[in-house]
Length: 153
Length: 153
DNA sequence: AATGAAATAAGATGCAC
DNA sequence: GTGCATCTTATTTCATT
Image 1 (spheres, helix red, strand yellow):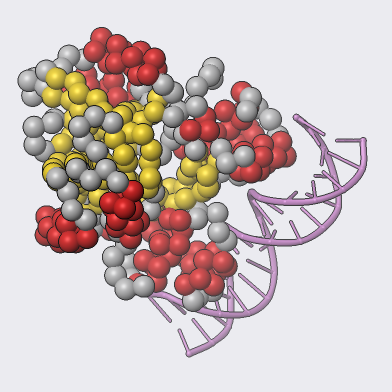
Image 2: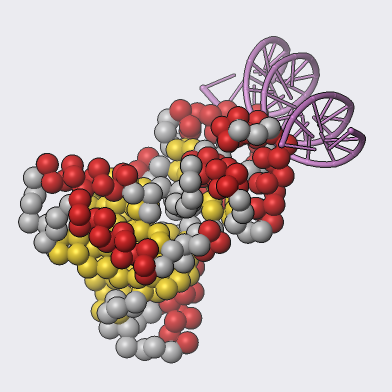
C-alpha cells in the first residue's frame, strides 16, 4: 500500500459515492488506476465494503448506552452465551472484550429508557453477570467511520 | 418513512454498493421507486451518506482505546478546548458526552502503546482534566455501522 | 509492473404512463 | 408504483512507458 492508495482511502472513507474519475481528480491520477487500486485493496481486505450511514436520531434512536460488563465465569461456554446474545441483538452495534477490570463493553442504540429497560431484561434473562453498569451518551459530538491513515498528505 | 423505506435502509446499511435494481429485487419493487425513495431519504437527512469501511488492523491500527475523562471545569471555554482537540485528532473516531460520573468518552484508534503514549501527551498538553482513565479493547467481536431499524420484516 | 485511451456493459437518472 | 430512453459510470481490452 503506497502513498496513492492511502490518499484514495482517505477520500473514499469520507465519501463512498464518488466516481473513480472524481477520486482520480482529487488524488492526481486518472480513473483507471484508481479503479484498479480500489479493487486490489478490496481483494486484500483493506477495504471491508461500502455502506450507507443512517442517522440514528432520525429513525427514533436517540439513546446510546455503553454497557460495561463484569463476569466471574471466564470459560468458553459463558463467552459463547454472551457472543450469541450480542449477535442476535440488532441494538448492539459494538461488542468488545476489554483489558482492565471491566471485561466487556457493549455499545447499544436504543429509542428511550423503556427500550433500555426491555433490553436489560432480555440480556440478564439470557446471560448472567457479576456486574452490569451502564452509562448513557447525551450527544455524539464527533462520530466517524473514517480510520486515521498515517503518512504524508 | 414507511415499511418499504425501512426495508431499503436495512439492505443498504449492510451493502451500499448494490444497484437500485438489486435492492428493488430484495424488497419487492423495481429500481425506479427504490432510487426515488433513497433520494428522498438523503434529502431528509435520514441517510447521512455512503462511505467505504477500512479494516483498521490492515492499516496498522491494532489498538482501540476507550479514554474516560472527568473534569471539574464545567464551563463552555473548557469544553471548546476539548472539542477543538478532538476534532483535530484523526485518531479520535468517537467523542461522547456521558451521563454519570464519567463526563466524556473517547474512542481512539492507535497503532500500539507507544502511539497511545504520544496521543496521551498531546491530549494533556492541550486540555487539563481531573481524571483520565483508559481501557483497551482486545478484539472487536461485533462491530457494525448498521443501526437497528424497527418494525416488521 | 503500472498507466492511459478507447470500447463495451451496466447502472443511474429522467420522462411518460 | 412500472416501463422505456438516455446519460453517466464501471469494467474490459489493448497499447504504452
